[in-house]
Length: 366
Image 1 (cartoon, rainbow, N blue to C red):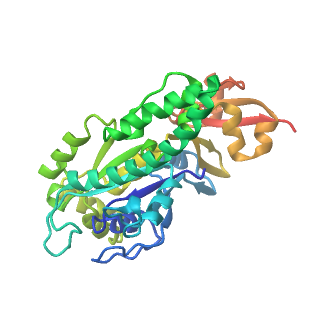
Image 2: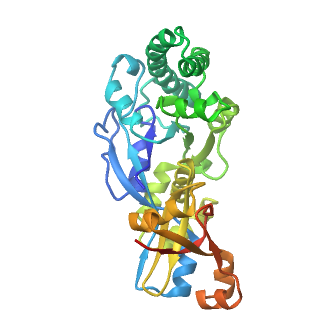
Image 3: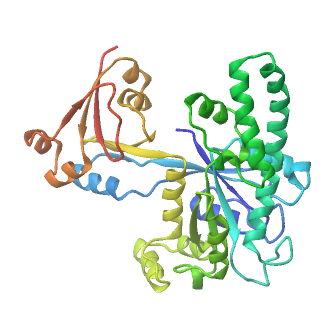
């Protein structure tokens, strides 16, 4: 699964510090703008207690967790849509990602320079929103001019496309993201997706705070919540600098003790990874046995043959059926054999929509 989340934000808001916590790939982190120039890509393990429990039960020779790709993208400044700073590179890099983790500085620190001279996360959010909206507006205007000519000839498809473009243009000109526009018909939805607009991507706002606000947030976070309340976007509070200190501790016990001291049950990094996974609309099914316990990543709503093809294309081509055990049944009964004996194993066909946490075994013939 090659879907990616891009970490974006203004310079010096903590993007690279956060990325360093997420990944073993070490992005340069320094107190000056544009310390990140080439996007750093990290393949991050997704924390999942279900995988841990299955490993305890199966005692396999091999364990493979689910992963998600996180991309640390260069900081953006005002005028990026016109090529200011590293604007063109930023916009090209973000276009290649599937979802956005928008980091906002929500802490005061006189030793860390803010590119605009003061801390105001709502203003920072609006700067990036504006630059992305302007770029999307250029895309929509260019496409609309061409589509209107086709619609004038009576082409029904072109008229539908022109209507979609006009509605998106209206939203962008009003200062709203393209994702705020909703379409009813499958044809409209498909055309909208194929525009690949920057502001159509799902977004999670990551409020970077100091350790005193890691558990409950602060006034900056409250301001962000109010600013995004009508966007349908999520908010996550993380203390990036604190997370970097946690990451340097040697043992799990030391990390848990540190978290308890600041009032947290788990690290912000773990919460962020799971949030990124969900933002990409990803879920997990498992294969489990004495040889291997493995988490397989699929897109929510996928049917059994498609999920089988994630293991190998032959599994999808020759799909016969899927044998499905629900995670709770497996854990309760303790083994595949016990599940079969209790009559809890389901046999599903090509139309079965795989559920998060399913334990799967595919039958195929090629």
